[in-house]
Image 1 (cartoon, one colour):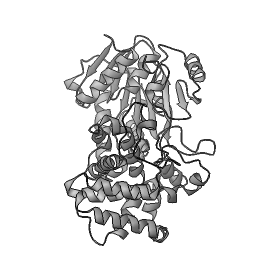
Image 2 (cartoon, one colour):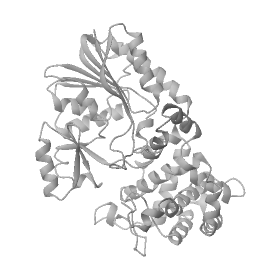
Image 3 (cartoon, one colour):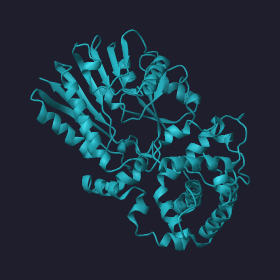
Image 4 (cartoon, helix red, strand yellow):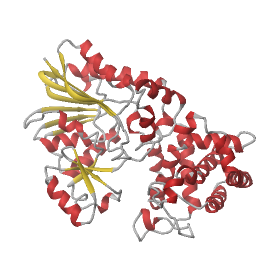
Amino acid sequence: MLNYRGIPSLIFYFMLVSNQSSPSVPLCQVLFHASNAVKQVLAGQSLTEFLESVPKEQKSAVQSISFYCMRHLLSSQKLSQQLLTKKAPNSLVYALLLVSLCLLSVPKRHAKALELDQLDESVPFYQAFTIVDETVKATQLHKKSAAFKGLINACLRRYVREEDALWSLLKDDEECQFNYPKWWIQLIKKSYPTQWENVLNAANLPGPLTLRVNRKKIRREEFCQTLTESGIDYQLYGEDAVILNKAMPVQAIPGFEQGLCAVQDAGAQLAGTLLPVKDGMQVLDACAAPGGKTAHLLERADIYMTAVDIDQKRLSRVEQNLKHLGHYSDKVKLLSEDVSDVSAWWDGKLFDMIMADVPCTASGIVRRHPDIKWLRQESDIQKTADLQRKIVKNLWQTLKPGGYFLYITCSVFPQEGEQQAQFIEQTFADACRLEAPGQLLPLATVDNPRPLQDGFFYALFQKK
């Protein structure tokens, strides 16, 4: 929440983004950390990983600015090309320029919202002179950038003077308009010829805060009553989802600390409703981390759960999440193994149900992880598709006859979705495809300009 219209001094911050007792943090420090975040993403590091190293008292503000910059990175890169007569001196100076251009461009992108005083609270808005001054101060926080404060100052002041002229040169640039790599735009165009613009634009909007009510501890109606009593507006979605109309710190949500709910996208919650789980069943959650879908199945029936993930650190998060929600017991087995190598972890007992949330490009959750579109390459699609097929081939043998197999990806690329579902049908003679949502797209509508769900693909099969 970084909307500070009317506040004259911006050397503050956490009055709004954190608790009232947090110390004030100079804006220049936040800009410096956000620039380092952009720098690391351009070098191939996950934004989530980088944010773990940011000081706690600055993390919320740094995340807000860096996420916004990730959503508008390419247009800032194109603007920087017009402002620099030659290549930036180093990657830190370049990142500082990109971040400041993103923030200076807010009025250009959100002019109508600013005029109506309806700027989305996720958009970091500051006066132009503040951005320029604080960015120049930020350059002095590291020796690699300190010598180039004059360059940064000149570029930003030129942008302020020539904003309209600079943007006019980009008006026909499709990459700049949508802020995706060219290959991504072309693939979405080809895959969704009538919806492609909506898909791209909607994925550049932050997703709403969506909760899954823990039905093992409380009924959704009771939980919603506590929200109403606390003055929190919401809307219902699906069987267990509650979407908050305004984002807030999770610690402030009634019952969150007690495990009455968990944060999980509405689209992701469909997984728990598609598998007809019943008490006593043996269920496998392949590629389980971070455990949202694992927990959802445990909330819906008294089952024996085997959760496998190759990453031990991420598997630890599954354990933490299950303990927080009250689902961790001797009926839950967590295994840090390569799920495609069944000989390394499978004891030979067939599963009643398998949920295969296989690795993918994550192209469907860009609005929650905007760095994805800059970390992925077009060649990654075939690599993940090959891995997905390897996993499915090996897991199918562990499923009982009559058992259910749910194939899931958080992708909008057909190569990882419908084409893989067809592969399963063609590869396994005993695979019967059942009704399932198929491809879910994050699409904006008149009633919901911010899509209520991320992009997912679901295909459900039963073994004959």
